[in-house]
Length: 158
Image (cartoon, rainbow, N blue to C red; front, side, top):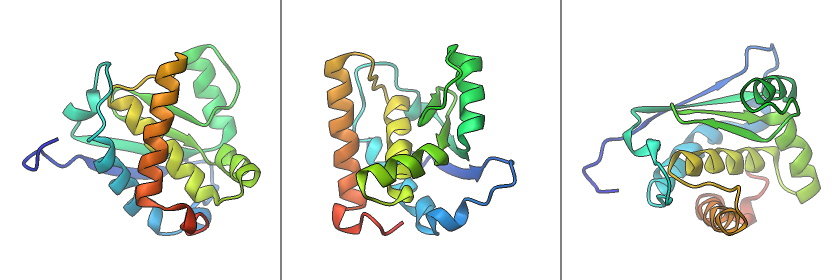
């Protein structure tokens, strides 16, 4: 990415299921997601990279019920998952999954959500994680980006 490249607009919204997720994630999620987007641009993967051409990326925070429905519709797997990324620039993140997993790993749901957002950005920037070696590399990069923008010492900051 060069200094004269265009800035990608980041839109962050919530599922319209009536659940207010803003309290869980505080006001920093948008700011940190923007930093994650910018950092992700410096890590293009070996596959198609639609992120470079997008004018905007939409992140939608959803429930397990919503993400399971979409997972079933588009991937024939009607179970909840953490994140689904569409090449047109939409990233769906399950806040229910983030809350559950964050408890297991001993950090905030906001930090887990941010990790899922970074994962989505990396998919948009040409990374895949179906193969073992690609999976390991993608996770190494996402952990590096996460640690850069939200160090482990701040694991409960959002």
